[in-house]
Image 1 (cartoon, one colour):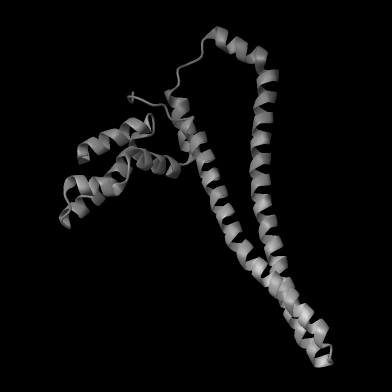
Image 2 (image 1 turned 180 degrees about the horizontal axis):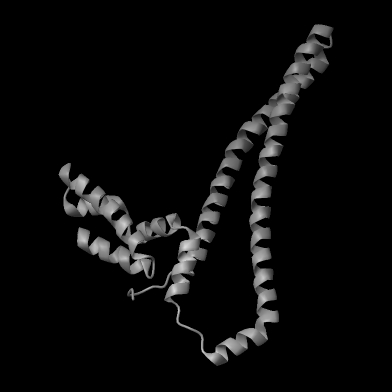
Length: 200
């Protein structure tokens, strides 16, 4: 893919995004392509190193503030006809409630997702604290002459330490998945405000 084909492919996927945002972002990627070509890469290699047009368009969309997208959508939408305005007013008690309910469900799911992440790391922290307590109890019991009890606390501390380490890596993977899910949700919301196809 040539640089020109790459630029056109990205533009097609950005729809009604503000032209200033598109131009600024594409200038950045074109400059990166030119830099790679100056370092000895061919045009096709330099373009391929940037990623797919879909990935670049998603990145640009992710970096564009939602208020700007809402403003562009509002400016690009046509005016409402009288009968549409009447239907909106008559149906407002229903669609406002449904819209609020959808927003509350979205916020609740998002809050539960990140609350679960906090709970997981809190449990991991408790296991780590249990390990420290077990090791401390081991030393104190040995000094007091309670050898069997001391080794029992050492075993408990080792179990807690091992569990804390293993779960820490597992929780990191879960957190990365939650971040990807959050990013996908934000991209989906932003894509609702960006039309596809030719710009007006």
